[in-house]
Length: 122
Image 1 (cartoon, rainbow, N blue to C red):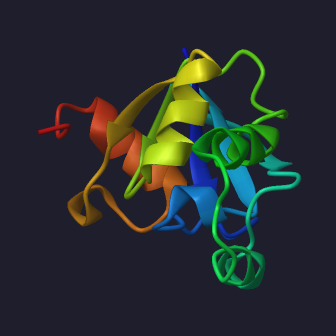
Image 2 (cartoon, one colour):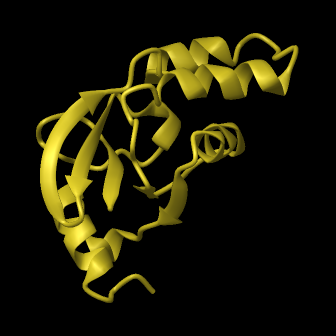
């Protein structure tokens, strides 16, 4: 199973707001594979600036988030702390299941994936 976790970067620190993640950590089952960029994803400043303007269509916002998923081909599952409705829809359209993880699973992607799959996914 291929898993993605939104992270800050090579430090593997989990980003709380999935739609603002600059990178995703990819795992094959519980084994770390690599970091991929979330191109065209909403960075924090860009996201705030973007929201100063009224969205004409929710569809446009969903498609914008979808662009940040282009490097996630083959991913089956995304583990997230928080995910907004537009990002959740974009992830669903990409055929990726979403599961929420808690802080008790860890602050770093590798420990969170391991703890999630060792039966602490409650």
